Image (cartoon, rainbow over all chains, first blue to last red; front, side, top):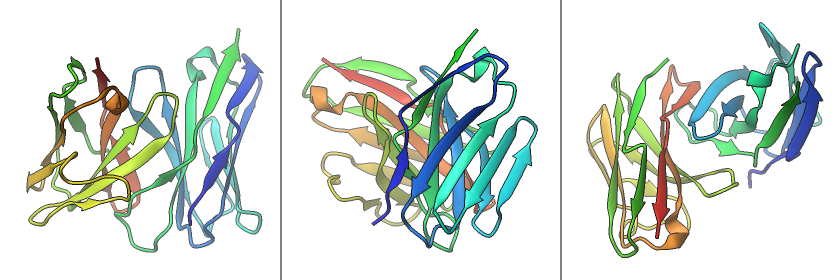
Length: 113
Length: 113
């Protein structure tokens, strides 16, 4: 079965880089996602990567995928206090679209000014 | 990105009553997904709602407790029936755009007292 693991907490200083890690077990995962959830809010799609890619960069966000080790990471450059939130890693595990996502438990990022 | 409106955004309900949550999407979508996020937890899929057919429920969720309607391609409702304090959660609906990007509503924060 599918399982997505994340560390629960991360604390960084403002201006530093944050790296949030995620491991997954299903090798048939096709897309892997990162979502941000701020207090009292829904989930905001930050970025996603197709499983045949190694890296994807979008402004301050860099996603790295190591398919051999089933390891996904999200790097946030120049972390700001507004980046404080819970970050969820998620995978879709079938080859067709429109399949529900499997989520990790979320990493709570705290940014210290 | 798809715009998803959920109503209500929050509610406090008495145990034994029912609450119907509405999800409206600004475009036609084949499937809509309903998730539950219990306090401090990750997202768990409740069911998948296809227009014109009965919803498909995940293990641990039953139609009598969480009836779902899907009258057209832009709208769905989830009812939480005969509520108990254990049903206190955030309930979120989700749709895919372009088969790869999964978007979420802002969620309905339910407290059962």
